[in-house]
Length: 202
Ligand SMILES: N[C@@H](CCC(=O)N[C@@H](CS)C(=O)NCC(=O)O)C(=O)O
Image (cartoon, rainbow, N blue to C red; front, side):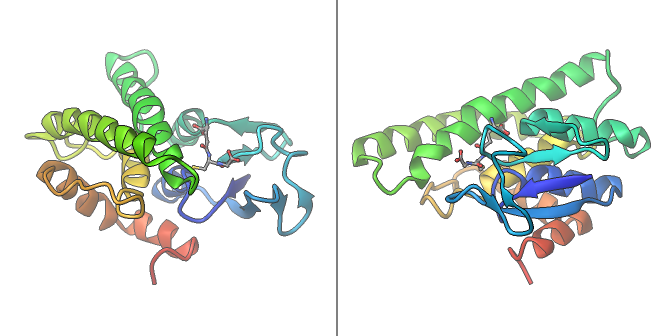
C-alpha cells in the first residue's frame, strides 16, 4: 500500500496508525502547492481532491479522508486494538471523536495557516479552537486517552492536529490534560518512528 503524505500534515495521523499496527507502507511525498509526487508527477491523477492523506491499496483503489483511512488501517490488524470492534457503542464513540477532530479542530486550523487570512478571522478561529479544546480538556480528566486507557486512532489524529498549535500561535498552556496527552502520545515508539520518517524529529 502507498500513503500519499506531506510532512507534518494531517497525513501524519494514518502514518502513525500504520506504525502502531505494524503495517508497512510505501511513503509517497506530495508537493501540495504544485500537486505533484516526487516519483511520478501528477498527484491529481491519484486523488482528484488534491489533498493528503490518500491511501492507495495494492489493487489500485484509492481511499481518502483521514477518519476513513485510520479505521481501515486499524481494522486490518484488530489484535492491535487501535479501534474498538465495529458495531459496538465504543466504535461509534471513536467515530464521534474522529468527526469532532475533523470538523471542529482540523478544519478550524486551516485558515490560520494561510498568510492572507485577515487578523479578525484569525482571532475568531483561535477563540473557536480554544472553546473546542476546552471540551477535550474536560473529557480527558481521569483518562489517559480519548477512549479511556487504550490508545486509539482518535489519539493519533488529535495528536497530529494539536501539534500545529505552536506554529499558528494558539496558546494551549491552560489545558494540562491535553498537554499531558500530547506528551504521552509523542513518547510512543510508533509515533516517534513516523515523525522521524517525515523529518519532524531527529
Ligand atoms: N477532508 C480531508 C482534508 C484533508 C486536508 O485538509 N489535507 C490538507 C493537509 S492537512 C491538504 O492536503 N491541503 C492541501 C490542499 O487542500 O490543497 C481529510 O479529512 O482527510
